[in-house]
Length: 556
RNA sequence: GGCCCCAUCGUCUAGCCCGGUCUAGGACACCUCCCUUUCACGGAGGUAACAGGGGUUCGAAUCCCCUUGGGGUCACCA
Image (cartoon, rainbow, N blue to C red; front, side, top):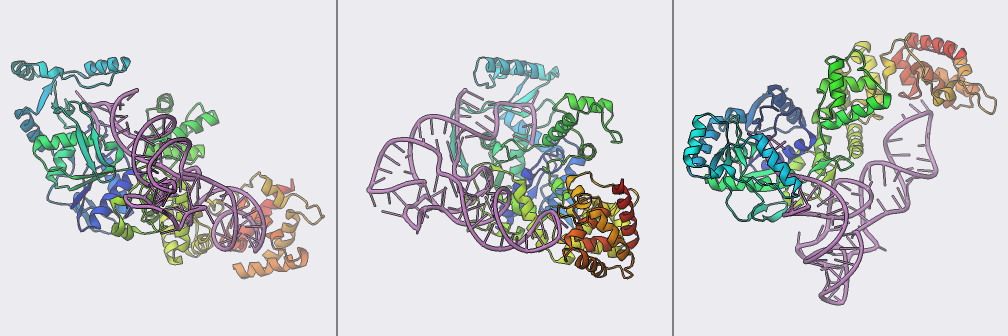
């Protein structure tokens, strides 16, 4: 048994693609088979060398390794891929495709067609205007053999089309069942483009044959393509793999999940802020690029540019690529778990499981036929559970690695001990590996640069007087400051003892009355780890300096 | 629009194939209360679905038909 995942290398690995890969992998590996990876780069416009490397990394990160396919050196030093049926890039297999295409032409099962793209476009539009379904009219078949020869000799650009026999086509699908497409639904489709590259349909069929693929699991959007592939298999004398078409994963609003969603979010943010020029300091985004992007919805920003712009606009981009989820601090095991749950379930109310479980239990019988809406909120809840359940040492290791990659400023600013305290204090309140860094900006801000939020909650904590006439937060701060200054052993417990003394004497033991003003005083906001941890991490000097600045700031 | 597929809480789903055990189960979200030095976590409750209409049957979420709704696809993209 051999399954394959065959993406086109247009950017990073999409979560939908990741789920397909996951299912293909699980299906084969759970049955002692092989999982093969192949890069479908037959579209010269869309492909780039760099793009394909991205998702090798993404797959590996998820824990999905391929038995055959492009070679990849994993971070652990091992090599993934290789194999006897390469090359695994379709652009390197042109000779094979051409050989097979010649066979078809010689057998009269495929033919040259000289229609130009413009001519076909016009016919398509005419058909649409007449409310008729468009089918290729086989104009090229009216040409005599000599005419074709002559045109070929003269170098007239030509495509090759597959001659589709009349009659209905019945598809056997392991998920959808047996489906019959009526006669005439499949027209003579192109199998080789003018640029000499095969189309997807042709390359897929040839490669699945030569790579000995036995089971094709792919997204449902490919379902009707199967008919074309079957025609080709019959023409070429190939065996037929077993097919299973997976339900699509969509956005919560039912729209297709697309890389363009990021651009959409960004355009909306630009509009909302009424920006007329690109924010300064974004590499590769000058006025020209900006104008072009804003003016044409089909133009997409590079990932790096998009991320930079999102940061400048202070908006969160929707995660759609595997790498986005990594960056947002999701655990790979959680992503694969959740992905599997979109379109499949093991039954018995079981919904938390690992990769090994998926490999063990995945089957086509329990695959859903309906599209699944991707619920990021539930994913977040799963990630929270997983992070909380992590042994402390594992969490610290992972959160540090995440920081080294995305928030180096934290690692430079904090001593190992301080970082450890911060991590300990953050573990149980983290839903992602990113949370520590996003919610503790006070750590990296200098004492002199700290600013206080202008919010209701901040005012309530430090400025407002309570109705019973008890002291304001600011007054309490002024009162505890000397006590803090007197703490010689600056640890969370010593600080707590000092503050508790004050609270017992002046707040009826209610620590909150003084904890919250302190929090605001040293972090600028109302949210932070437990206050004594916060102060301990910050250190005595910073704490006192920040309190002084706070007192001064709010005194006005 | 043609063709194809699908239809259980807001969402992911269990149950459907092999009708009764379903006053339809779980999870996320939501609401209420509790815990609490902030946030988050945690604890206890709660609201919430078989798209509609016809059949078949003693009996239908489960089988059949129609309607409605949703999705996919109709490229020299994959």
